[in-house]
Image (cartoon, rainbow, N blue to C red; front, top):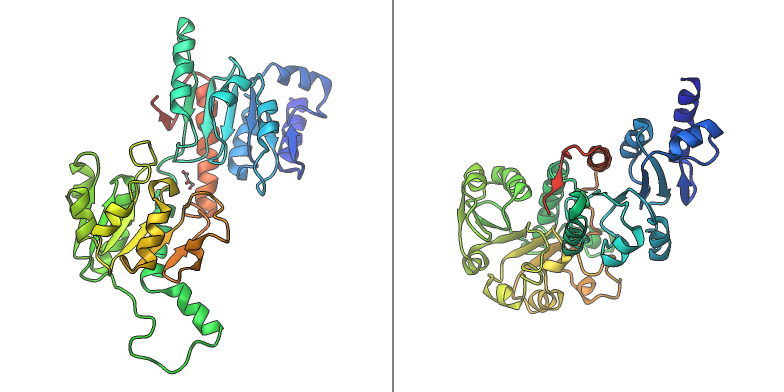
Length: 371
Ligand SMILES: O=C(O)C(=O)CO
């Protein structure tokens, strides 16, 4: 008991110690080390927010090693080394979980928990193969992810980005600070308002609904959406009409992208879509950069084919500061912060930890990806 309490305090201290790579067994009394070394081994690829680390530390169910930085991702070489023989892995969206990594981890790996709602960094094909390969013992790698807990935060940021883009807030503060603010002018820095507008949602899910709910009080006239098929239950929550992709492009005054990045949606926002949009319309993307053909977007923005774009996601990330999109006044670019609120990131971290512990116990995860 005494040993247990000391060990827990030690774990709590270690979980926040500012070193790059931490192991929660190092420095513990011998008996505790022996007891812990029989626990499942977990590697965490990032210093995730404290709630998740606390859950793992206090569970007494796992021993973990952590890349203890949030400023730089774990180098690939180190990652491949660290995953050798682990039972479970917590990752974030910067880590490619592919055949090479699964090979490096080896057959003990049975749970993968990503602290993200997006899962385009996971090679689902390779993960599915792990199920087939291990069929004789009926186990494969189970995958947890973190939907729902970030919906409010992402929807809120999407609204902020949409308004910043359509009402030209970034340009306006720049003008005010740099001497561009002369007399009050009748058409200076005019933008486009939501009142009486049609808002289009590309990919209607939880986040699209949450965005529409927040935009409705701005007196939006109509919500339209497209997806692989109509989603009547979700659509009825926001009174949205199902339309074709072409209709979405031509009718939307504001077009917001909410679909996941998959082989089917890669580059789906391209020349063809932009050419059908009104030249007064605003394009917003808070899903994944890969759904947009960025050269086509640049053309559409610089030629006046569309009025503006707000992007929280790009390819690559970070987008190099020399990228042409940064030269455009009508393009607002954020560094992938849609879910960046303290409460949401802690909730994501806690959900990732709980998914992992449940997965290791062979129980249903709170949020599990069906492979
Ligand atoms: O969770 C995700 O997929 C993100 O993009 C981070 O919010």
